[in-house]
Amino acid sequence: MKQILLTNDDGYYSDGIRALYAALKKKYDVYIVAPDREQSASSHSLTLNRPLRVHKIEKNWYTTDGTPTDCVMLAIHLLFKRRRPDMIISGINHGANMGDDVTYSGTVAAAIEGSILRIPSMAVSMANYELGTSMARAARFVARLVASVADMKMEPATFLNVNLPLDNGKTYREYEFTALGFRHYKDIVIHKTDPRGKDYYWIGGRPKWKTTRGSDFEAVQRGVVSITPLRLCFTDADTLNKLSGFRLKL
Image 1 (cartoon, helix red, strand yellow):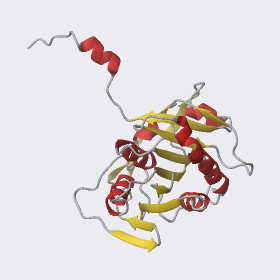
Image 2 (cartoon, rainbow, N blue to C red):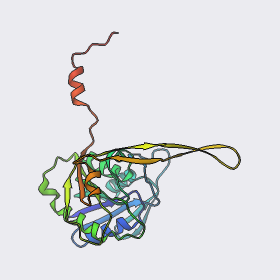
Image 3 (cartoon, rainbow, N blue to C red):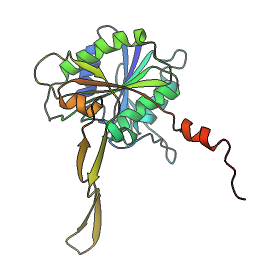
């Protein structure tokens, strides 16, 4: 492995992506193409209704006014025309991306795009992130994980979703391979009225996790790094088999 592409949804200036760059550049040829502003919850969206601008910050470091998925697309077509990167890493995100939230996550979306392109990819997040928390130890764990990915012999369409517990000042050593957890929200749409008497709505609410043994949330809650192999395949194989002999009443 020689070349790694880094991106995120927190913006090119974030502590997470800078820590990853510092940890990986010692051994790999690292490129950054990241959004010029926060793109949290942008999911797997592409910008199709306006042109995109790309600006060079310094050597191997670029920013664009698009989404994380845009960043991957632009990087592949502009920087890796002759040879694709050996890996795409999205993160380190400031906050967890576990359970159902992976469907909304811009961080995870960049890794999804990498998997679609059949490039080994991973999304990395720090749960319960607090402003000013050092990402250096988390980045060093990711660097060690990168060195082991080839030995995992995963299918090209599979990518890793990594969630680290909040840094407690110690080296990250404990990890578990996990499944996606589940959480639900109460009052997911909050209705308010502004000073002029007009209604407005805020999407958010209070999340509550279901603690399931073997899930990403359960591992992180115990202070263990969660590594979840994911694959973008929406086909329900069991139902497809059941429907093979079904006939519609037309």
